[in-house]
Amino acid sequence: MNKKMISLAMAMTFVIGTAAASFAADCAGVVKAVAGTAVTVTCADGTETMATGAAKVGDKVTVKGGKIEAAKKKKAIEGC
Image (cartoon, rainbow, N blue to C red; front, side, top):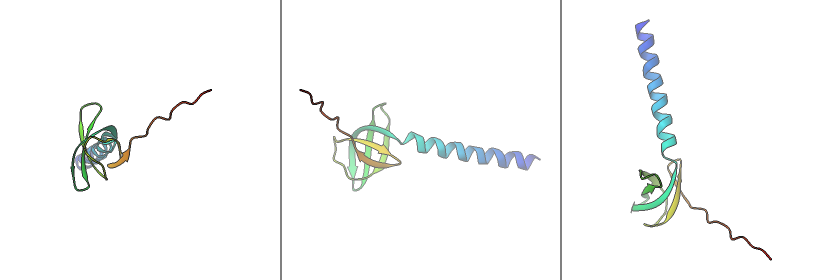
């Protein structure tokens, strides 16, 4: 019984750890440094995350799943 409890605890720790890492990487921010295809992004909440993609220092980007996406520009409102 004791081995089952330890195995269950280890499995739950792994699942929670990987889930937290996958959700923590998604953010929007500014590119701080670029080294080849590895990009360091400073998120809006002050944290830094690593991602892959093509970007220049100072670009506003969105990180989803560890990959860089260009920040979406707001469309201008047209009227009469």
